[in-house]
Length: 234
Ligand SMILES: [Zn+2]
Image (tube, rainbow, N blue to C red; front, side, top):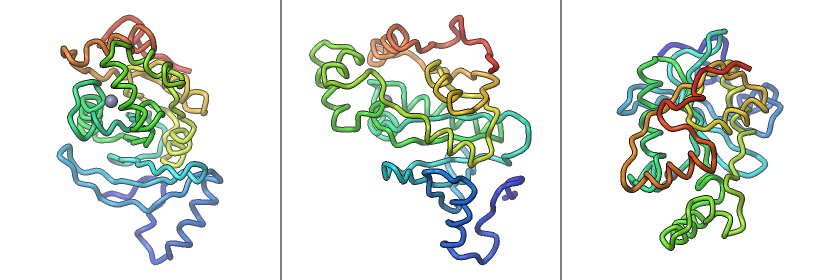
């Protein structure tokens, strides 16, 4: 496995965990604790993983790294928010599992890229409230109405931590895998330069169709290659 260009290789010497942690503290001056890297062979190919802990919330996130980072070339990035039911259990109520699968495949094919796995379940409202919202949807509300019925905004996700993780991973210019324009503007607010939006192609099914259409109509998501999906610089 090649060392990451211009980056840390904490396993390569005999520094103690404490020394590594202190160095990371200095490097990021941030709210993040950062682990050493470990190998993660997957069905998509070989990745490195680096764990992050948000000192402010205790949430633990993951960076999956493919290839050599650093340098000036834009890097293919997916910022994926956890969805236990979709990512792990194969739920067809949403497209999260399909998006995760497509993103890992596209990054593996590119040979270089990052997937951030952020532990903000249910667009930030948590697993318990997500299931409560599903129950409301079973009663006829759409995904946005259900969240609002429970007293939450339509989307509580926070991308500040993603900005810090990507800074740590030396990814400043992104080719972002997303169908969500709000995510692009959120990441831009945290200083990241998105040079291209790379669509994730996810199939409509009878089960996820209403959910995906609500995301398109109420949250501004783009489905497939709709107008507005052209590359944007900023
Ligand atoms: Zn989901």
